[in-house]
Amino acid sequence: MQEITERRLEKRPKAATSSRTRKAAIPRFEFQTRSEDDVLDDGYRWRKYGQKVVKNCTHPRSYYRCAHTTCNVKKQVQRLSEDTGIVVTTYEGVHNHPSEKIMETLSPLLRQIQLLSGFSPDK
Image 1 (cartoon, rainbow, N blue to C red):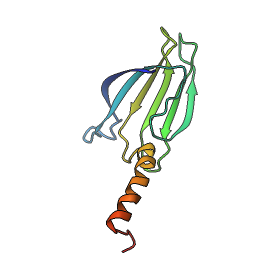
Image 2: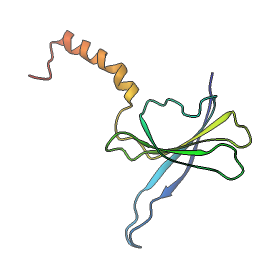
Image 3: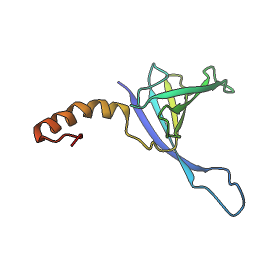
Image 4: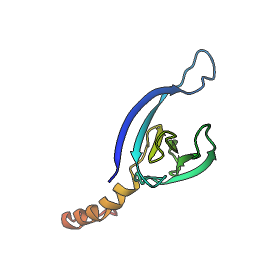
């Protein structure tokens, strides 16, 4: 069983291109989960793009981007230095598409509804 703690972090603004224009702040969320696995399944597909050694910690921090083409969400995964049984996952941004797991679950149900109602997307 996994124990999950959620914490909303301060919004980090993107770098402004000039003093007049400011971009909207990106929401950040941090989850602390007690788990043996480093990468937890959250329903989305991720592409790893980096890893670095963190000071005073024996475990590295990994960096991921959402694999969906139009989505700019990033996440960082690392183990807590005080308690290595806890995985800290920090999300930056909000997904602009549904979760892969939800769509896999709903697809058969939607097909069944289409058959029962006589609806066809081709019509």
